[in-house]
Image (tube, rainbow, N blue to C red; front, side):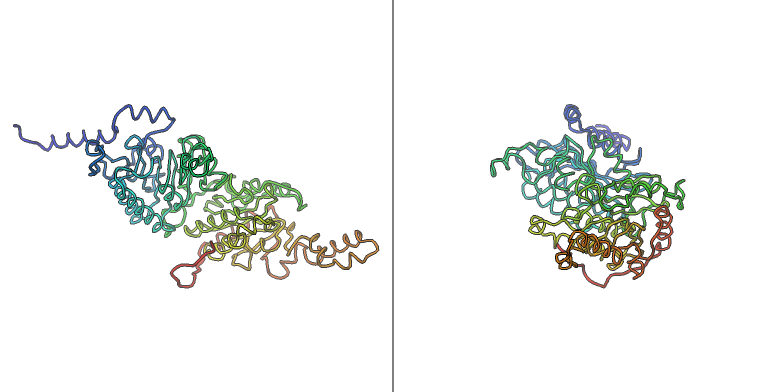
Length: 519
């Protein structure tokens, strides 16, 4: 028997690593591709800079016995874990390998993820999960369930400390769906992403409703109906490219600032088109996204939840190279009113930006909260208060600009000076008031209008009187509720100067374990 050499051991190691890279068998890869899906390693290659991936525990195998598992012990145990770089910055990633046990999570599988999550938190670097798994590995029983518990606990511990991004690239059912819900952003791909707590078979058995997987929990459902998915794309390649772009806008952790990228767009560039984009008539609609494009560097921004709660726009962009979070009412959808969904959407976005040192710019054009029995019964008071709480709790630089209407409680909630905005600005088209002149006149002068010889003429006169006295553009400025009324064309330049001034802002909350936000 020949002597074992170091060279021989290295060759053996190379063979094992190659087995781990190739997966269980070529036919499994073919089946994955036939579904229009990439493999775990192909996805990682698209996400990370070329050649930067360092794998962790590629030779890990489960130790379970029974149900035939002892005869099937593939390397990696169905999840590829490690770190690499995106634009040269460290990012940790794990990817379920659907070719192995359908990506189902077992004890060893979970322990690999736990280790990687601990490493990401210790290193202070973002964590991206590429999800494509069938849930808990039934053959491993409670060990698999405990594995999910460990993931959820780590998701929560890392919340607000490092960015966490979930990319849905296959099924995600049962308790497994809660990990993505605990992360900061969820990406989904049409036709291949599904998320649900109970699948179509269970739904039909319990409720009698017949529904397909995509109808129950497909990408567009979660992008536009439930709000679970923040971004939805047509294919994996585009999706992963957008994950890279999002990472370029985020800091590595909560102790750092987002990366600054200076471009050729001058900070003092005039926005002449803004005079025509926003009609002076408060009853006329327009698309706030056109205003955002005019204000931000090179017109580029990344909208979050673009198809859910469309009456509020939330986006990440740059102003003079610095990343900002933009929250804006959308008059093109529901006249820009605030409702339950918009409030929850805005609150989560504001909290995220505050967690990761991203200044907030709020563009206000809001007629109020949406009235209705359904809104009241579904909890608009407590759920609308989430947005108020998020703004009041935020310590990052905060600038608000009232473009047109700003009525009632909705004006206060949209980062008004009274709840802590550092700089409050307004355009000369602003109408800041308890309510619109028409509604206010009907209430305040109700008796005079009713007793007049010509009630309609009196009503019109009182509307104009109220507008002249209380809703004119400079009323708030005269009382110090806005810092200045600015020329719309100068908005970008004013924002850039204000952000530069606020760059060193130091604000602390009272000492406490944590607040108790409205639920």
